[in-house]
Length: 190
Image (cartoon, rainbow, N blue to C red; front, top):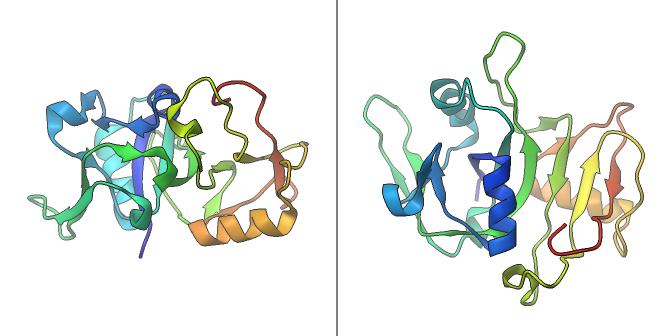
């Protein structure tokens, strides 16, 4: 099943990680207000970003595995668009988000998107146990892939990170074409 994507404010995603679920539908509108969460296919990401997020700052692109989403996903036609858009009818469980990446426009203000390339991204493996819903417990199963130096995530080797990125359909290229992971800081949902 192809991955789907959602453009999110970084602060909204951090809140979702603490809560265990994401409940924003689109820019400045909640799931309760809209009735579903807007998502896109890879071909639709730049179109949506350029139409609705050109002046927004501190955005992330959530990479979602539809097979992990607990709520119903409906592909629905939108007037004036050729392809149907995926809509999530319920809260997005955070363990369905397999990766996030900073999402900023080019210097001319326009967005573009290539699902196979990223200069910086965060690989988010499945969360197990009850820690996803308990803010008092740290989540230790997050491996961040960033440009620059870092340390390997505990219990996760280079091959695991490569397989995780490949499963998510994205490649994260560091400054010298290398992949570096950082273990999260200790504490609640660091």
